[in-house]
Length: 188
View 1 (cartoon, rainbow, N blue to C red):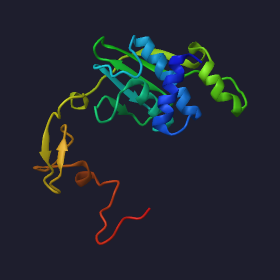
View 2: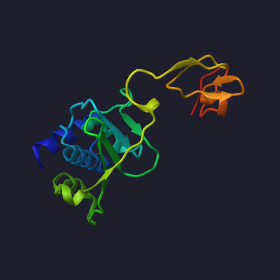
View 3: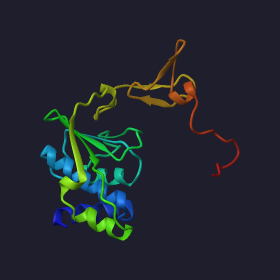
View 4: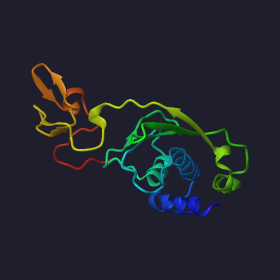
């Protein structure tokens, strides 16, 4: 395993909590995509926006390798349930989608070693892609801030829903994933 791969896996492991199959493969895929774009891993590239297509270990590895985060609005989650990511360098206007190639069958005890040492071309499928992103989803200052007409909470980046002549947040307009419980803590 190269020093670069080892350093990235160790940082991803520290962030995620362990070095599982998905974390190591995600690290290798992220490194392949960064290399393809000519970007330096684990350093925040100003124009890089990354989309992860699964909410599993790979997402943590990609976050570490790319330096993209939800808080900077340059890490986007697209719920496709696929072990893949798109890295879009807005500076060069180039985007690449990375996904794993079919891995050879092997004993579980040998998988991590294989993923750490296999040549990149055996692991990563790279495809040039185009990305279309609404201006309200771009990094930077909020594109708008308004209060929900019903609950009063702030709505950022034009995420409000017009209902009649009122502007509502999505939970007030469509229902929420949570329910406020009066007089007690919510228990799982």
